[in-house]
Length: 314
Image 1 (tube, one colour):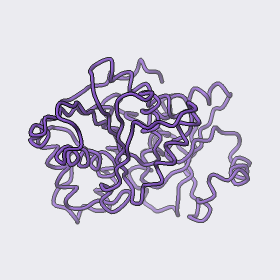
Image 2 (cartoon, rainbow, N blue to C red):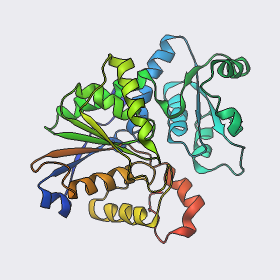
Image 3 (tube, rainbow, N blue to C red):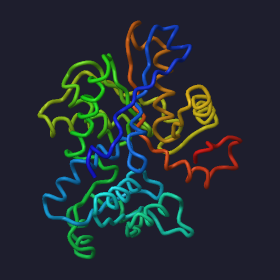
Image 4 (cartoon, rainbow, N blue to C red):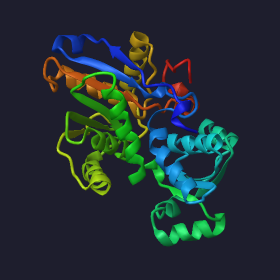
């Protein structure tokens, strides 16, 4: 699978009263529309890793994730599209029937194996990885969430795509592992501003992680960015009636479906920061829709009784 198979990045203007009152132009980078099966930041993180895997002679990708992981879903799809076998090591015990994420991963050819939570915590230990590979055979190992040094160039390429279309002052993205934000920073190379909105509780550690990633990739730690940790709505994959109402309203006003894990929190946070005067008048801010919409089917399966609204596209 190559970039030729992908749709060029679309920028959509988001007109909100709060932004208009503050004199801020808000654009949404529709990375969720760049490919029907493998959109958004997950492809960008995988792109250069897939090239490395092929260069190193691997025909198998092995990765880790939770049962509803966007990353697991993306690796399975990428394997099918690019001709790799895939193995997913899933946190926790197998539950039948499979949830929608794992059902699709299996349909894409992924071999699913399950690790106890205790074993899963060892996923970065070299001796543990060696034990796994002794059982599975040789494989190119992708970390949980897909964040490593080779994930960053894909994010940097997103900045090049943005600057080819418009002038902007800041770019904002949701953060889980910090890899996408780190990639954006390498693309910005110290110019403009980047914002990360943490999707998980107690996300302050991401400041160190992002700095370590950019240092390893470019030899630099950048100062032109900020991390915002107050928009997690209870923690990773947690949500509230307020967040669901925001996502529903956003879809009604703009025709764009957000997800409750990453992009819903991102846009809620960006609009709140705009209304609080965080951005100077006359600024153009680009928020990146990184995809993740496959997760809606799982949310509906688990939580439909807790909300009167669920997206029609789930």
